[in-house]
Image (cartoon, rainbow, N blue to C red; front, side, top):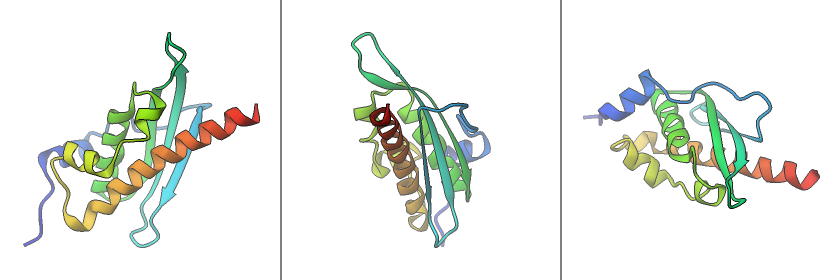
Length: 132
């Protein structure tokens, strides 16, 4: 019998957090999976705290994909918002999956897409800074 989605996955799929885009983002990251067709785009707005450390002030996502892809994108934005950049890059697929109460084995790749999109957005931000 196929494993069902947890209540948390269904909650994030039916009521995703931070969905949309940010105008003039500090960084963007886009990833896709050619096998399943999922595409995720993450937008971040970076600010500095009083200690001068960069953190994610705002984060949004756009996902074309299944319920698990949308749920993992939503969770990544929740986990990353307010985090220092160096800590946000450490959000793992294990942490994402745990936050959702698990994912069916055939949907675990969605959590990997979500964390890769976040890392790409942070990398994009760093590239923009180097150009300035």
